Image (cartoon, rainbow, N blue to C red; front, side, top):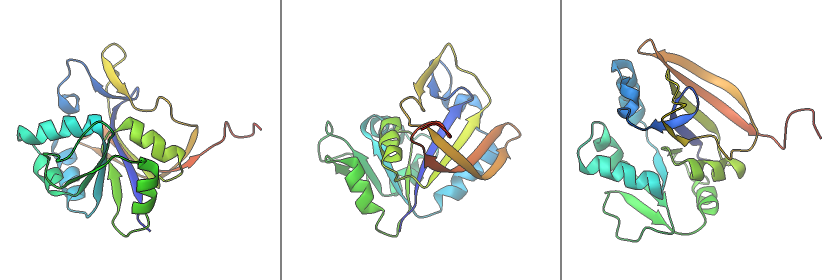
Length: 188
């Protein structure tokens, strides 16, 4: 059975982006880019929502660093607003129910990973389909300029730490196994 990993980059206060800040909050360094390169050599299918698809397809079109690997990788975008043909190479559109489609994909052998896509991730987590949550925390707080709150609308989730490391002496990579809870422990 294929494993599904949610991948996020986040500020310490849980934002996926911030108005006026450069990409990666200006803190991408050699260790982080080496991690991405190493990770990119693994086989997996990338899952995206429509908003993230539009953003990343735009990055790919402009030749943004690191996008060649994502372009070459198989991608599935879940959307009721996009129409075929999709211009970004190696992308399949699924207009139906994302949870049911991913449940069927998990029956295969190819690992699955998300990029961003908070709404998609939330739906897959609630459905109990997520095996790993992997987060790279950037040491900034974006209280005034933050956008894309990643964890809003999530159910309560207990996380078991599986792995961690520091990249470039400042970024923290955390990998967890999630357990969706019906509510706070001991209540009920």
